[in-house]
Length: 85
Image: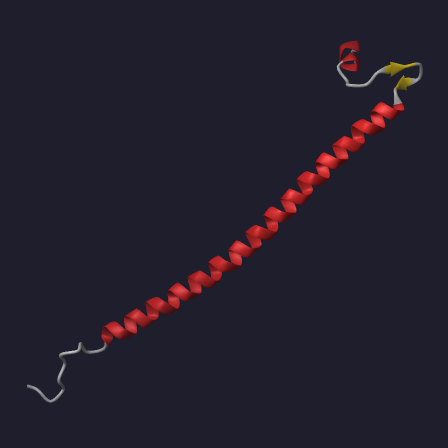
């Protein structure tokens, strides 16, 4: 590992490596950000599941309405008179 990679990390070099408090703080911030991303992802997944259910319900309702339109279209019109020739 080159020395330029070691100096690019955001930690102070101390006698036995990186400052433990800085490293701990860094990972606590990372953990907080990671948990926020997970929370957002979980909320997005829940919303997607809800929208998928609503879409399925809407598709079923559309199919019902199309069937009803087809049924009503097959009926005779308002001027139809079965006794007239």
